[in-house]
Image 1 (tube, one colour):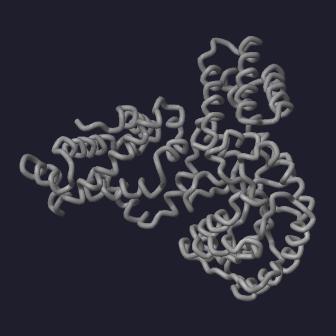
Image 2: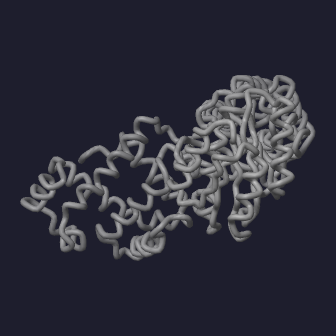
Image 3: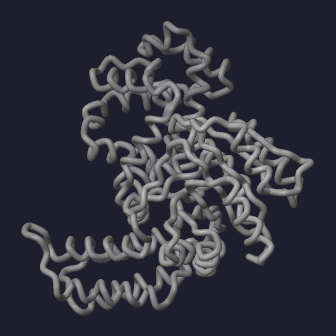
Length: 446
């Protein structure tokens, strides 16, 4: 989970509100102290943290909850809205063919982010092309070329040319306007006059519709100053924050950039090529506070290869005609959507469930082993799991490299899933079912 420490602290605040007997001065003082502590530990500016908690207390005292809402529920809503406020405005980035120029200082993850952005475009059905215009680092050109092959994007470089703006113009001429064309420019250790002049020439030659600054979230509050400087120099249309998942200063970077005037458009949430997300402040804060993000979960499912098979399997589950064939497809789809440690933050309730990281890892490993076991079954056995007894279980265990009790654990979980079919139609029941399975210690063998 991105900003996991901040999220846990803020969720504890919400839990304290939920358990309180009354919303009074004492509770407001405790909530304010806890929120301030959580924000400051995540490197959010002191003044900003104080302003936020002052607004929370003021609104809780002056505003009346809507009809039917309790004071506690209303206070939770106020906290949510004020945390949301410091994350900046919603400014949607349109994933359509256009020229995108990436700028930034050295070591911020710009080249890798270019490939991640190309991959994100492709997932949205837009072909992408990458142009290597970092004329100062041959290794950056080689890296971008390798990454372009990995994401199956078009690539252009001119290693003999030392003028970045010439390469930018050549690249534009090479690729059709129906592509998203991404220009990777050079970086420096500082935003010096030479760098400013070079990226300004590139901008003139490339004529981008988007100029995105790539910033490492580990910069914390200084990310805001860097965003302001680049914005003044080349006119940014947005910022990409990288390494947000592993930075204790991520809260400072997010809040500082949001106040710089340059909107956050994307966030890097991991090392893998798929780990780049469009930034939506409302959805981000919802996940941060443990309220889930069903929309992102659905979008991940929509981007899956083979989602039609998964939809058919889900329909079979709901109708009761559910064999191990459909069960296998569901496990495969779940694996493609990402690790459980990230998925659980998208599901309302699971982020706040008492499920530690080890249980999540155990569950993921157990489900992966279930697929291996099913690979050793015949079509008849997959279609008729009720025949899996005695010698068949022994044979499958030997063929898959597992113990017989692990095969029986698979069959037990399959039966539990079938019985939970009615719960799948209800989000509340589905959540309870998943929580029980995860909290049981990682689907231990029965």
